[in-house]
Image (cartoon, helix red, strand yellow):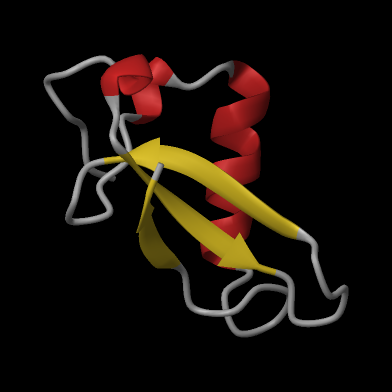
Length: 69
C-alpha cells in the first residue's frame, strides 16, 4: 500500500473503480496523479471500501482509472 505525504483533502485527482455489473455505480477515492491513495487519510469505512475495490478488480470492479477531481 502506498502512502502520500499530503492530506487527502488536498487531492486534485481521484481513482475510480467502476462496477462491472451495475452501470453508474463506482467507488472513488482521492489520490495523486499516479493513482496513489493516502490510506491513512481515509476514514475506516473508506479504507475498507478502497481495499475491497482493489481486491475485487476483475471480479466486481473494472481496472481503475485516475481522473481530475
